[in-house]
Image 1 (cartoon, rainbow, N blue to C red):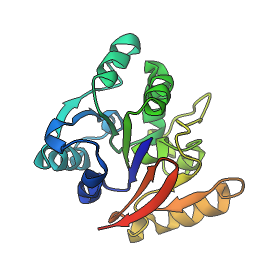
Image 2 (cartoon, one colour):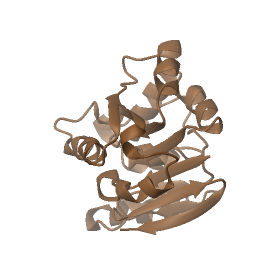
Image 3 (cartoon, rainbow, N blue to C red):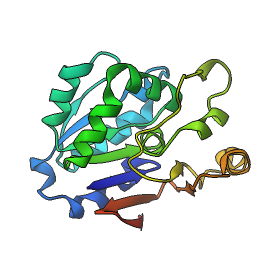
Image 4 (cartoon, rainbow, N blue to C red):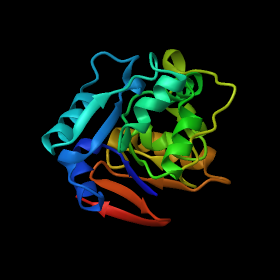
Length: 204
């Protein structure tokens, strides 16, 4: 099992390439931009997609808002990498629940698909996204019946840890949600790779 979690994938995705079983030019990426749907513009998504294309990956968008159930399972099954881009994590989780993405991805990653997260996509990979409530207050927030994440890893990523404007959120997250959870700060120049159960921090 190979999982690659980033704060900003555009800055760190090149570090994934040596761990891949085949060249980037032969690797199909299911690129999921859904978390950014409620924002306009969303340049971070374009940055991530462009970084993948420049490295030679074969990138195809799969939006959870419009792709559900068996169609979603088939399209993800045809990919080598499932890439979940950043944006609003609570909205992303809601669409993941509605589309069937959660169960599909859990099975596919266990079967050998590679999961890559960028910001919200990395947070989704953890046990739950409860910590995201501190970011998504007000009009952009959602009340969900369940905040359970994909559970691909046993820790919760706190992205953008090197940006001063995020520091108050990080401190509040650790204060309010740190009990009973392992929270991991991740800078935009860092990535966490989990390969066959072994976790490593990579720096750019």
